[in-house]
Length: 223
Length: 55
Image (cartoon, rainbow over all chains, first blue to last red):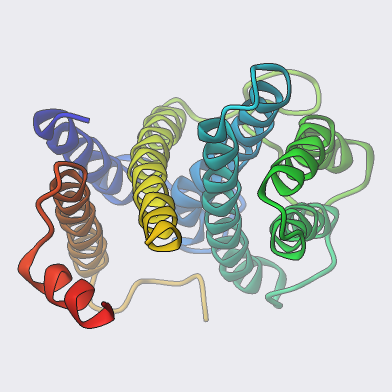
């Protein structure tokens, strides 16, 4: 990413922060200022989903695109970043739940499904650590992450819609309609886009760092 | 934790958020510059010294 574009991203997310606190109105039915957490919680959850789908796509490209190690590396980094955004979404969600529901953890279907997503992708990282042969590790991990292309949409979009939940409706609700106040929707969309660009930037840096690390390890083994 | 009025006003919360975001952003910019240096074969003096010690 060019430096000018990076600064544009800084400005973009700074605008989202200002919008979340000074522009968007408070949501009806929410205690005090608690609805402002949603402007960060929703984009983080959305970005984690994008990361897991990106990991699945990179893994499919690895399996059916010539076994290029760059795709394997890209999938691993995507899962790591996806986990980071999932944890952030869970923490911000728990803070909001403490205000609205009186406890950080309530075994709500949304909380359980995000927890299951963390376990699923945590197992991906554990799988990678447990196989020593690099080719077998990449192949097994890629097969597992491709399975995530079905699991992630199920956990993020299906489970919360087929069970009773205290969680507020999604931006696109169960009736397929966008039922969000327009100023809030603007900030939510700006935030989601900004966080996604931030994710792709972090992904790019992390992949390059991982490539350098692999190159150094290979050079050390060779000497 | 309550959902009531924010102590000290919302301005402080905005300021803290902007400071945290700017810190993270500058860290990423610096990390990216270091990665670029390493890709071009120009290890920073600190990293060079570490690599020498390792040898």
